Image 1 (cartoon, rainbow, N blue to C red):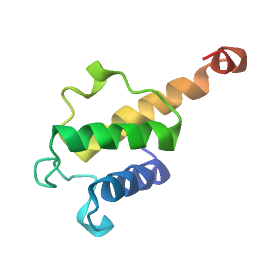
Image 2 (spheres, rainbow, N blue to C red):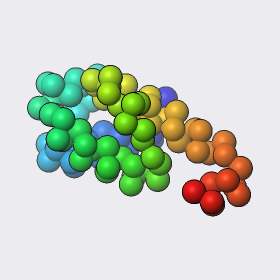
Image 3 (tube, rainbow, N blue to C red):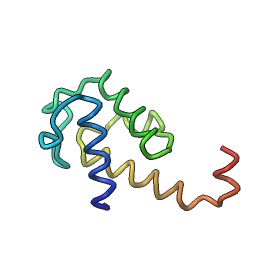
Image 4 (cartoon, helix red, strand yellow):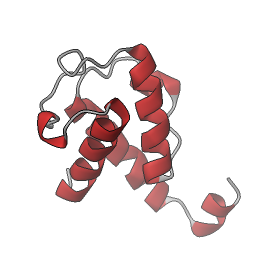
Length: 91
């Protein structure tokens, strides 16, 4: 997983939850950060905007920590990058 992508995910989570960045690590559990389902929705929207991706609802149902979130984002970013330019433009 790229360090740059991880840092961006950590920053989005910290900003969305309004907690200090140093409290959010790749190994943080959402419950330990005080992230509830409403916070998770806000974070998802922020991550979609940050990475210009669409996160399917079914992909996030079992995400419980920052590492799982970052790994999922990385897969979606990679899949988007692999799309032909004309397919991406039509979405």
